[in-house]
Image 1 (cartoon, rainbow, N blue to C red):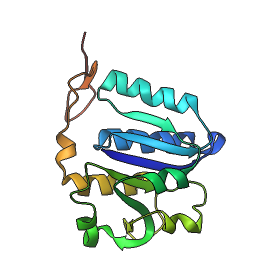
Image 2: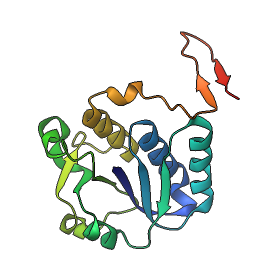
Image 3: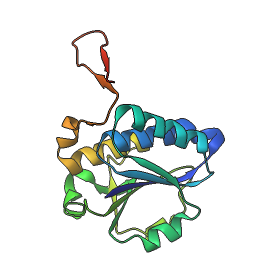
Length: 172
């Protein structure tokens, strides 16, 4: 199981970013996202609605304490940060842990003691960037591009790829 942990969500400021973390996680092969900070039922319902229409069994869950969650997590814990080892040099630390992997992405200001709760820190560039971008690149590297071919059998909406324009099929 691949879990994404989004740290310290703030309802007033982070709704879009946290939603995008969840949607990227779902589309690129993660099984669930847990988040700390403010409990945001509206964001959870939006992601649930996407999963119901577009398929899959992706879950979103609020947790009260990310430190307790990481401390008790059984598996590999990876923190995505611009300060880590470049992703192109260290994906071997994640390979083989797809059964129980927690990928941590930051929020407001990540406390320095995060390093007490992770196994390794991976960077997607050592430049400032979006946690959604880092998450997408990391998941793509983890799955070696296979996630780009995923389809969800239980979807009620399906995009028909086109060179131009939009076409969507709605299943019964």
